[in-house]
Image: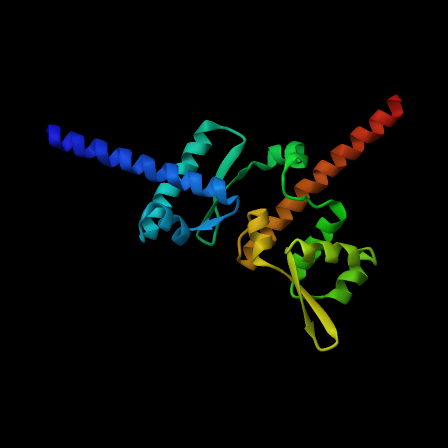
Length: 201
């Protein structure tokens, strides 16, 4: 009986340690990681085991009710990220450059319609989109290729990782729609606050 209890205790400790390593990997990466990569961290090739442990970690974050969350994406990847409710207030503190509304909307246009002709983007977003595209190329969020006399734009894998999105285009499109709806709401609230402040002054 004592040996069985000791074995169970050792297994529990081993599982907790593996979950802690998964958490550390997701934190350090700062982007979604697939099951294979996470498996290498904890020394297993079993995707089933990695998925089970990662889901336990996700449940732990849910029960803590903090500003962080572990999400399971639809392409067998997990990500540790800030909840959307908190990002609008603290995003200015982020080390990585964050996009302003204009480039963000140009990026959304490209992501929704990829692969899309650069000319089509300019026609839809205006000539200021040239600067947006240059910024997005420099950040590695979009890529451009020549196709005859035309230039074609599409988002990169880094784009999906940067925003914690699925690599599956259909899933990504749904996720983007939610994100930009939230951004519009935040901008509307900021505009309303600015109007009220100007009236008071």
